[in-house]
Amino acid sequence: MTSPRILTNFVAGEHVPPRMGGYLDDVAPATGAVIARVPASTEEDVDTAVAAAKGAFAYPWSHTSSAERADLLDAVAAVIDRRCDELAELESRDTGKPIKLASTVDIPRAAANFRFFAGAVRHDATDAHVMDGVALNYTLRKPLGVAGLVTPWNLPIYLLSWKVAPALAMGNTVVAKPSEMTPLTATALAEIFAEVGAPPGVFNVIHGTGAEAGEAIIGHEDVAAVSFTGGTKTGKRVAAVAAPAFKKLSLELGGKNPTIVFADADIDEAVEGAVRAGFLNQGQVCLCGSRILIEKKVAARFEEAFVARVTAMRVGDPADPATELGALISLAHREKVEGYIALAKEEGGTIAAGGGRPSLPDALAGGAFVEPTVVTGLAPTCRTATEEIFGPVVTLHSFEDEAEALELANGVRYGLCASVWTQNLARAHRVSAALETGMVWVNSWLLRDLRVPFGGMKDSGVGREGGRYSLEFFSESRNVCIKM
Ligand code: NDP
Image 1 (cartoon, rainbow, N blue to C red):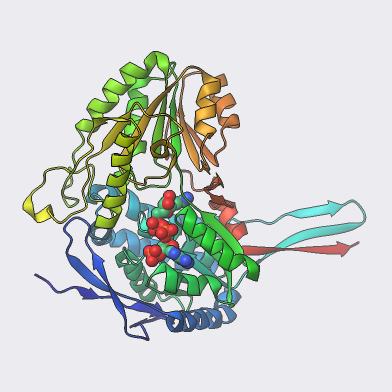
Image 2: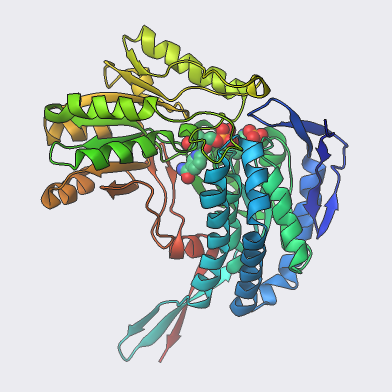
């Protein structure tokens, strides 16, 4: 057995141990083995990292041109591409997600994020407002300073790069805290920044718990902006800490997203789409469609095909390229998910597929596996059908007409996204306009264009990231009015 790797923070261009010397275990969810020791960073580490980021902002980063910053982001993307296989393996071991998903989605997307924001800032333009014969207004976009970025475990480098790239592109420097459960690819990203010659202090990584390291970053007086992705409850806490200091704040939070299948949909395609939306990354994507609403006329047909497809899904070793579902993030999280399966039964639901633990080889006996699970027969207002489970559990419900579909879809506290399946164009427009969500996919799910606004309403968050929305978030607009 190999001994666990000892990870370091990345501060001022150096790989450094935590100042107070504390460490946490990083556990591989598929086996239960400790694969690394993660710095349990404290306020002292955060102070040093923020000071490094502040210094690097003052010089040289805020003096660089957008072309120079874009070149650095492109260089990072090129190394991510070159190290794709290795990074995919790290991500798969750390999260329990299938290697195929990590190598075809997570890592390529991280490279794409850097490349996209390099292009975005190269081609960025600001507004001018002319007051005829009186004055000319034009908008300057100034960087904010130090950006504090806090990210979750489900898509570690994918979401970290989604924030780091636009923050740096606009001339800010960064202190990032990944989830302490998935520190490996953030550590690799630090190595990549060192390799491409990023000025020391421009990109800093502090590992540790949210309550200690995360909160110290968010509350730090020299952190000007906070971009947070995580659960709604944590988001409330983050807002409470950041808001009194008038920091710019972006919150990407949880979801309980509907997949709405109308009778006029291509049912085979809808089944495939709903399976992907329900179970990608073991259902641990904020956008997952965990409530499937089906028009009554086609409910029986849809359910039969859906349950058959889910039952056939391959759960197992994340390292096996044929695996469709790997492990959940931790045994504690599996307990939470299994608690919801038990609750579903108490609430009168029928387990139509899954519901238990898969039988797997001995090497995976300590892993956090759960079968993909389908629950039918629940009231759409019950807890199982309205609370975020963040695991491979979906509930099926039927509706009579469009009005009822909308009532059910909008009847939760979350408002992140929806996926609508219909061949009726007028209905697609009507329903998309009436849904209370930040994003709607029609006849698709998670089809991503990095330019579009990404984010949720209601309890799913505040603000939008993506394309120019990210560039605007990570900068301060200043109007200059020149009298003619
Ligand atoms: P958490 O909210 O538990 O944690 C997210 C991050 O915040 C982690 O790095 C965590 O550290 C940190 N954190 C925890 N407490 C604090 C605090 N008081 N101050 C500052 N930082 C803190 O979410 P999970 O990691 O469990 O991720 C799952 C959640 O994220 C789900 O609800 C999911 O829907 C949501 N999510 C939303 C997305 C979106 O774009 N809308 C995308 C992906 C996920 P630690 O690990 O130590 O707790």
